[in-house]
Amino acid sequence: MKKAAIDGRNHFARTLFGANLYVWKKLIGICGGDSTNFLMRESCRRLENNDYSISYRLKPKRCEQMSIFRQGKNYKNLAIVLQGPIRCEEHYTVETVRYYRTLYPDAIIIVSTWDTENEQELDRIKAEDAVIQLSHMPSEAGHLNINYQIVNTRAGVEKAAELGALYICKCRTDQRIYRPYIFDSLINLMNAYPSQKSNFQNKRLVTLSMNYGNMFYPYFISDFFYFGTAEEMMRLFCIDIDDRDQFSMPSHSTRKDFAKAEYAPEVFLIKKYLKSLGCSCEDTVEAYWNAVRKYLICVDIKMIDLDWPKYEFHFADHVMSGTFFGDDNELKLKTANLDFVNWINLYSGALKYAPEYEQYADVLFN
Image (cartoon, rainbow, N blue to C red; front, side):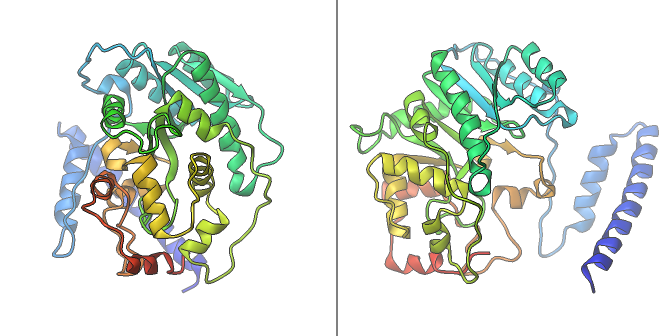
C-alpha cells in the first residue's frame, strides 16, 4: 500500500476515534465522573494482553496543579539556563519558568533565546522574575544547526557566571524537569564521585543518557541536559562554532563511523569537552567507556523526570525512557543505555569492558 493511502487511512481512523472519544468524555463528565482517568484506565484494561502490560500517567501542565513540598533551602548559587526558541503552545516555556521559580525561589533562571522571539511570551517570562538573554541567530548554522545551540547556550552560561552562579543547569525551552530538587542530588553525586583527574577538571560533568543504544554509540550523549560547575559549563560551551557544511553519511555507516565523523551535535560537543581534558577520544567502546568513567556522571530521563512534548513519541513512555523497543534485537541493543544504574556499575567495576563489545558499535546505524 502506498504511503499516501496509508496516511489517509490513519488520518480517517484518528479522526473517527477522536470524535468518539470526545463524546464519551462528555457523557462521563455529565454523569459526574472523572472522564480522563476512566477512559485511560479502561483503555489500558482493554488493550492489555499477554504481550504487553499497559499503564498511564497524568502530568500536570500548570504549576498550581502540583503539590510541592517547599524545602526552604537557599539556591542563590544555582542557575537554570533554558536554551532555544520559546515554546508558545500552552505557554509551555512560561509555565516551566513558573515551576522552577516555585521550587527554587532564589535561583537564577535565564531564558537564552533569539531576538526574534514572541514579545508577549518574553514579557510573560520576565513577569516570572527570569532573566531574558537575547542573541542574534548566527549566519552560519553549522552541521545540523549545531551553532544555534552553541551560540544560544554560551550566552546563557556566560550570563549565569556573570551573575555569580556556582552551578549551572542547561536544559531546553521546550522541555521540563519534573523531579523536584534534583539539583541537590546531582551536587551530592559530584561531591561523592570526584573527578579522577582533578588537576584538569573542576568537578565531573553530569550528562543525560540517550534512549537508544548509547552504550555502544561512542560519545552519543544527549545534549538536552547538562549540569556542572560554572567552570565546567563554560568549558563545554565557550568553544568555536562549527565551520562544517551540512553533510550526509555514506550508506552502510556504523555507529563508530558516525562517531568518528562527529555527525551528531551531541558527539561534537562532548568530544570537544573531553579533548579539552586531555582525552584522546578514540572511536571505540573501550575509549568511550573509559572517558565516561573518568570524567562524567550519567543520569537518565527517568531519574530527572524529563518532559518533552515536541513529538508524538512522548505519549509512549517506554520509548521516551528507552526501556522497550518493539524493533530491537541482539545487535542493536537499543535499551542498553548509560543510565545511572549502568554508569554506577561502570564506575565501580561491576560492569567491565570486554573486546567483544566492539561488535555492537560496528552495526549499521540508520
